[in-house]
Amino acid sequence: MTSTFPNISISTERLVLRPLDEDDVPALAEMMNDEQVVAWTTVPHPYTEADARRWITRLAPGERTEGRGIVLAVTEFLTQRLVGIVHLRNTDWRVRSSELAYVIAPWARGEGYASEAALATAQWLFHDQDFERIELRTAADNTASQQVAQKIGCISEGVLRNAWIARARAEDGSWARVRTDIIVWSLLPEDLAGVGEQPADASGFTSYSDWN
View 1: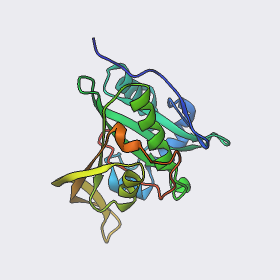
View 2: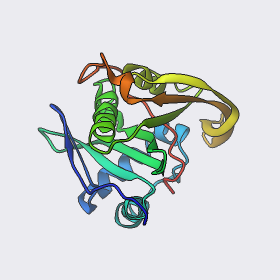
View 3: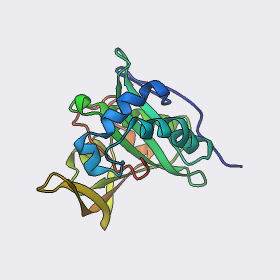
View 4: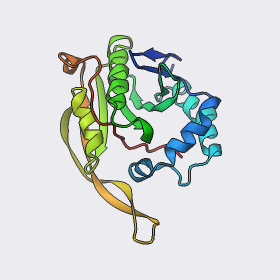
């Protein structure tokens, strides 16, 4: 029988991580059309509300029910505004390991929300789900996302050379494909020792390979 994550919410002092719902469609579509999200992910561009609705109603629920991971909306506790997305994916239930990815809305960057959401997810995964490893993968030029990995206690394990295709603006305004290296990070339960409950840093992005 395939294992699955529970349909849960996670709260911090500033954030609530919860399942996506259809009310998130406009904010999700707006966030995914941001230039930095387009640059570091494989989201369709332009990203329409139909794309957002398909992800919220079909693809994200499928991640959980099929045992591949879980997608959580990250919202501000006070305003309930959508801050971003946290995604556990490529989950291996036998070895209790999962890959963590995230996207933060442009208006919410620089507030430490990425690390706060990632750390809360890691603590839940280790303490409540008995997982033993979390992996993050960041593009070599994506320094903001690397800062998030470092702030939550991740250890850099090495580089996958020429392993990702990012996107960059061409002179005519179109998007060009650019190959880049990937840095692999890991986080184990013991790595959380000494990490603050709510580290502050710049927000970042990891590579979302299935936002399409």
